[in-house]
Amino acid sequence: MDYIQAIILAIIEGITEFLPVSSTGHMIIASSFFGIAQDDFTKLFTIVIQLGTILSVVILYFKRFFQTIDFYFKLLIGFIPAVVLGLLLSDFIDGLLENPITVAISLIIGGVILLKVDEWFTPKEETEVVKEISYSTAFKIGMFQCLAMIPGVSRSGASIVGGMSQKLSRTTAAEFSFFLAVPTMLGATVKKCYDYYKAGFVLSDEQVNLLIIGNVVGFIVAMIAIKSFIGFLSKNGFKLFGYYRIVAGIAVLLIHFFVQKLTII
Image 1 (cartoon, one colour):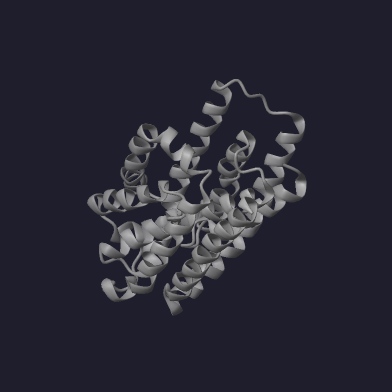
Image 2: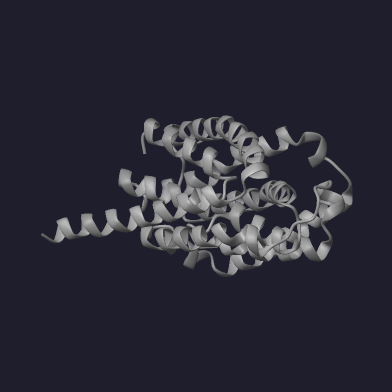
């Protein structure tokens, strides 16, 4: 991985992490295009730079994030399913991270769901997140979030749909998804760093610099993306993201099979 590739991947992460389009899926597609998807450092990089994006949530929602103990217990309850399944399916998930076909199919299926989600669920009026969400609701949203272990599903998309299935408004579900991302992505980063260290890999000075640059770029871009997404979502819903996912998924399939055919010829 070079610096240009690191910056591009970080921009993709910052834009897509909190949108219902799958940041992991987009980074798999981009890293596959660069020819570095199977590199161990690339896999580490795509996880670790999430620290920059979750920091953007803490900064943007500073007053609302630092709340009562009850609020943190709800985040913990929502985080538990990802911990359990993440530990059980770690090797299986790593295998999926190299497969653009899985990403493409997930993008298309998720796109169809986003086209219908506003029709399926009738939200309540907007209220403060911590007062709206019960412990059982937080756990159910956490279960939905686990679907994002399949590349291309979208962590934010799955958890937002999970929130709406519990009668939360679009904005309330999206904001709780942002908050839930903090322990989830922090845990994923710690786990990936531990696995990297346990496997005997040592970061070079250049790789450390790449991680720093990736986090800084991801942080800046995510700040802009979150503000833009909440405003757009409250007014327009999910259909645009649904259409985008379907088109992107079909494009990935076409490119993959076309390139494969050329290779065979």
